[in-house]
Length: 523
Image (cartoon, rainbow, N blue to C red):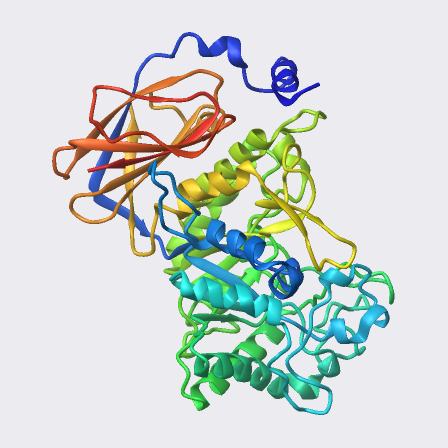
């Protein structure tokens, strides 16, 4: 069965109506955009290149890795006006813990998820380590990616309590030895310092990742590097990193807390949760308010909050209210479709466009409901299919056994993320909208989802997700903005990959394709 036949068959049992419902468009919907009412500033939209960057950047042929870099970072257009890449404005780099050097004794079963360390056990640095990772980092810089972010999953293994890059005890304490806090802080700072001297400046350094998970595995059965951290331990290491950066006269900002679940930012257990209240208030038990290099930005991951439309709305409303109350910005710093929420009640395989639409829906809710100032995907590439259940990645890899070469296939997820990342640039403002049908936010999650952004006095960007199986005519009214004269659309659908339309005069209605993500650039 070919894809077209499967898609038609699947439509009868999935939540969308299918091609037969595309014949007659629905009633026109009016979107009112108030360009004066600015809701939030967008800092960046990016992704992580963890694990598989090493093999690709170090070994794969130039033509393949150059093409991957172009797809991720380029802001250029081809002769037909189609984007050559998705123009990420943030790129996340994993500072490794040295599990690669340990080999099979590291306990991490997949060699591709072991990571080298710049710091040897004898205290010397080898800056040739992680060369594949650094190839992509330098490419990101050369393409003009605005935000380079270094993050750590584990301290170097020689600093950990069990000599491993993950926990083996279920005691919910950091795996870092109590007498190695300063050494770990100085290590992270030295990495930032070295690459700054080489012209690769990290805008942000994230010392702690997903501290709420215990990361404990059997001694030889771990999935990846990782460590839990209590709020008290986070406060200690962040303070030391802040001081170490200042001593070296570096202006890299510290990104924290990288909560493993959004609800940990405002609630749940006390050991590693209620992080907004603990860290971002003057009276908080572990307040960062006096740390010069810690901005008022709290980072969290959208995993496990996407199993229903009500969770997408309610969790993010609670988070937005808490963030506003305490005067901090929220970054969504890691997400992929880790659990089965993207299946939306069906046990069938989900097509590439189904996954892309769900990804766009999560981005929309994080930005429009949660007021996320940044949105960063995990992970750019992993082995898998490019046609079905593309839940984890933008590119499906088919590597050889040693990961020294291989092939890659672009998924619809890449282009759906590009509907946001390519056109919503750092510093742009999201502006408020209203709709003529006054549809509640919960119902919009299965209908039409819209956000709008200003990029100056003469440019308005709108991203619309048409979740239905019907064409949708949309009329735009923009107040506190100049007259809308021309527009161009960029559409991701089953048959289009961020495909550009010709530049057109603004007409009474703009037609959105069924089951599509469309970016509309208005001038």
